[in-house]
Length: 324
Length: 264
Image 1 (cartoon, one colour):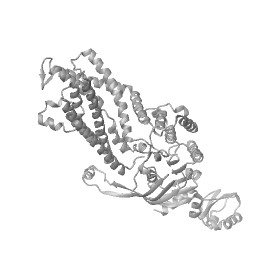
Image 2 (image 1 turned 120 degrees about the vertical axis):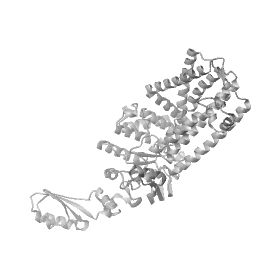
Image 3 (image 1 turned 180 degrees about the horizontal axis):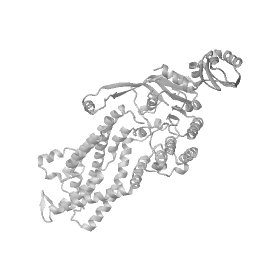
């Protein structure tokens, strides 16, 4: 196992402040501290070369977990091991094998060209010149920014800067990659390019990757295995397809009608979700699918009929709602 | 080692980006020196002396302090506080680089720049004003002055870094630093030579670390302290440097325990 986490907990201590000047003064003298469990007793392990999606609503504890795994935070309790290292000891052998990429992180030197930061990272990670040049031309070609390497960072657009940040984080070919919302703020074309890139990186480097994202598309197209976390606890850990089976014992039936029908005829049907002529959408339990479809075909004149799984977003939303 | 050299070089490059800023800043330091020079030159006309300083030694003290303070009291490491609060510190914790040496390298880059320009400016002023300055020729004193400056520079770096570490506990890192700067200038002898103070106050000051930041190196240069006093002084400042280093290490470790890598 490359990563193993057992009974990890991280509590934050914060204080509350009422608005207003008087309350500000009051908060100088007495503060009511509150302990918030950001991550609460979670355990999982990840093998080499796995690409795992980490999903959950805002504030569920995804980023906190990644920060613990990459050694930024000391946990309140529990054990973490990455390549046999304890992350928060921050040994150089550990740090040179990992990377944490966050959507809004900024390691580039603002006033200097991005290339300068890359060269600094070359020295920091002690990469040979040959390997550095190879890696740099590979990454900058892949992300299509080779012509911008010598432009001062402050003159770059947001998307270009994100790409540069990504190059800076990957120049040392990390074996373990923590990606926190990597596609945040990118346009659809770039999102797709980044997804392809992550998939490719996973394969070519045999890298272990944990990815958090709000875009289900990222997770669906990249990860076989997903871990769902809500209010600091793991509520699902397994293969994406089994999540669908486990949590959605129904399918969506979509029909395109050939002839207009009376709405009263629809009232007799079970599970109508939406009707807007000519489209009719209804749900049906898995075991009744054939029964329902044959009934529909008999009753209506139908041009087209499709059966599909409910969208993954819906399933996950249901799970979140159930756990609140 | 290479990585820290690279950091120093980038800091150097960065300074040149804002050219106007840089030029104005140098102009400010020249004006400051000129003001002090004319003030003291008229306070002590040549041939007279106050507090045991004649015009030559007083002017050397005043100009010397401004040179030494541009070397010693120029440190960017107070930005540590802002980096902690903005979460930018995370960038360094994630990479195999020592944050402490990173800032020291940045300071070295900065200081080399300061020294080069200060020497150029002072030589120009020297050529134009032809001030009566004391030139130390004894190589032992010059060597000891150099050593005292290095110690002072490390000590001030540690002070500044420590003030930055307040950022772990409070977002208000500027207020303590502001008070510190005001006290420092007085205690270190940036305003006047400290030995013009009553003897018992002065001997108390000598136990504090501040005296060794500016006053002490200049006094060695002027040759106005005995060898025994020099070694006592160096021992005291070595003691403070070591103590500060241990405090910084301790506070840094404590701070990391509660660091939340917020905002990122």
